[in-house]
Image 1 (cartoon, rainbow, N blue to C red):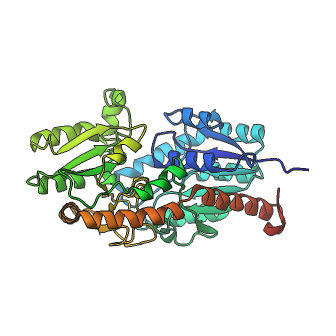
Image 2 (cartoon, helix red, strand yellow):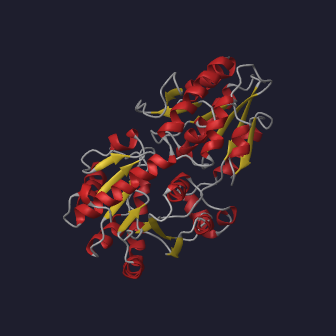
Length: 416
């Protein structure tokens, strides 16, 4: 008798079109047919339709309580006001309980660190919990780290860190392993591009430097713009900035939006960046292209990908560029090189250093052969490292292992 599919309830704290939601979607799409029956509980957002199209049963919740302090955006100072929202959103715990009773999942999979309230509800309902850790933890706020570790070790059966930068920041967390995010798109098509590298060794007329991330100060967009200012005399370099605000344009026009912006939350970076670019007379050198639903055409017109964030880890855009043979420049506070190997698959610069970023951009702009070499290395490495079939298999092994352990069986003996 064939084993039935595992029933997995994925809980997301938002359905914004960012790396966390997209990475989860690509994971679900990569799972072998018939292995997992997928449900997602999340607030409304642009990614809901994509999950439904992938066959996921989407259930709605107004919000999910989060307690999260990450590198570059620590939970201290005025950000402590977020604790009000953390407590307020616990009022929706009843929805989580009802969904668990209705779905009767074998596993609850939380799509980011910080959903401790949801983890506690699941464990009290007798359901094992897997938690994705997608952001490098801020270890400068001791009480947050201590509390978070205690809650993870109490309520979470297994933590999946998306890279070594994240894993190494989770001091004191038990049962944590690295499983990388899967690549997106047609694997055969991506692999075939190895015969025709996008990054050419001949010097193009314009070197296209691209930023592909949400327009947040923590993603380093202002560092990027400062580097464009430093390189303003380089007529051969063009900056392409893809991404949008964390909130829609309409939100920033409301009273609530103005109030939130006043306290430093959800800034209207897109508007501020346009004003800055005009003031510095960089309109023809730095172009804001807005949020992109499809990134393939944008990356096809990219020579160098930059990710100058303050988050102490490489973003998803680095992977998406690398599998297409495009080298990346990444800012890191700690030089962990499991993804970006400095001088091999890309370049690493110091965080919050526009001058160092500008120098790295100029170096690659001046050396087409180096760009081609780094891009080819990145493509070869990433097609293996982020292979979607391999990663889906690793996640399935985690699911089976956690279920077996929760039922007091040998993980190697379970086939569910």
